[in-house]
Length: 359
Image (cartoon, rainbow, N blue to C red; front, top):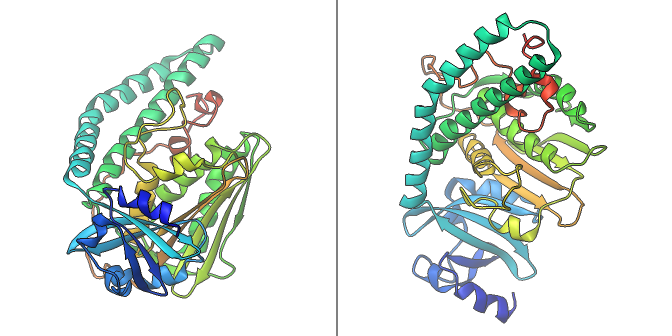
């Protein structure tokens, strides 16, 4: 790492440090009060050491660290001199914002429920009329989008506040993924895209929260669809490595610029004004937290300039300790709504939301 880059990193208020062969070799000023040169990385990673060993040194790895007795989230990039860690504290300000978002989602539920009930009554009495059908479809799509937004705010707020547990149950992951693709593939391919999937070659049974896992996959799929032009391809692959299963969602779209990549995991970050593809900025942080709740982590690989991007998140195949718990009651923000239509409501055409066609 060059001296010029070190001088820049010294200006960071975030802790930044360099690791080579498992040992800290350099710290910026913010990091020096939390650790020192010679510190073993294994002492900072705690249970995530095996995840770090899985990393192939490409893309940006997301990990949790303990620095000075406090919890940090770290982005890691490989450099010729070693692995560069840039950490950020899970601070009170971010927690307060996440709490406000969650509370807002609770307030939205009653008017949203009223809107759904009123719209259902209108749809049932609507006569076959081309102009009314178009208007009803637009209204229905907006309702689906609001349901997704409310769910992102509710579950996202709880995930980012670490108030949500994964209700992990024994699941056939190959069957789960086949069901997911069966639901998502016709929706994605209706947009002129190709969706390929490479499920596990053999059955894999693991303890997972299927609702959270589905949410993670749909978030990444929605992102890929948003940035892949018609005629492009999105591929979902799975690969077992040691006691982890790696899910990778890859597209051949426009890629991710370095400016955006730098703030990809900062919550509620402002992005290009008028770009409807950016929502609350909670999607990738949510996926990272879902991976963490499953004993895994996340890697983003991006190329700026139309070469596409890929995101890999891992889940542990170790047995969880939840199997002895009594069944838990969970709130499902989707209700009876089609999960694929909800999660992809921002990218699908209005024709999918004709209320007379949706069962």
